[in-house]
Image (cartoon, rainbow, N blue to C red; front, side):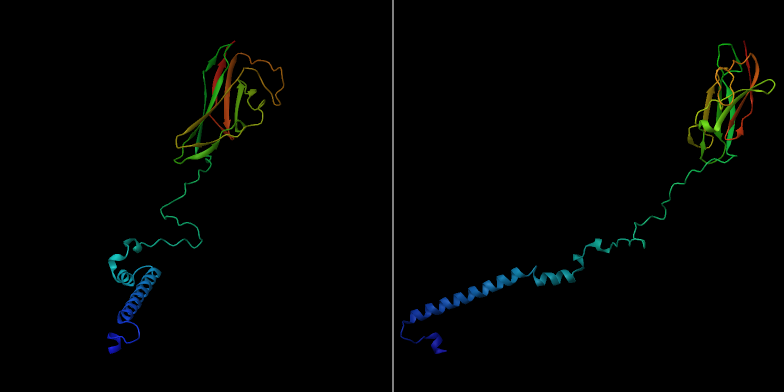
Length: 218
């Protein structure tokens, strides 16, 4: 103990004290550097980590919300209330009502008769109907019932026209008769129909409308 407080040696006492003071300073610097290096290696203070683990207020409330698991098939989950739109089916034979009309009941010598066939959905649901030229036919007969003209005689390949009809919805199909007679195969140079009484018939998909009487004047 006396040698620490009272150094003994050939050098002066002040030299020994400076050496011991320098060694003490170096020891303190090494201790401080070691402490700073250890703190830099840690992500955060150990005491702060422990406090965060023990303090309930440090937990975000959103952690309580759990995302739903995906379906077993791996696809997206579907809400039970979601329903696919119902497919619109074709109209049945009893869903449609057919009406035949004409622009006039009597046509003068220079007037071309025009006929209109109207399909109306009389059911309570929406349905689809084919109203192309291939499924509709207009026919004109004379007073004796002989066939004078038909839209089917000179009809080209019928086009397909499918429409959705809402309840009470309608679609109309029309044609104009040039007053010239026709025959199957559409032969040319057919004569013009004479003045007189005629009956117009209209059919759609095999369903016939109420026949319509007209007259032609010369």
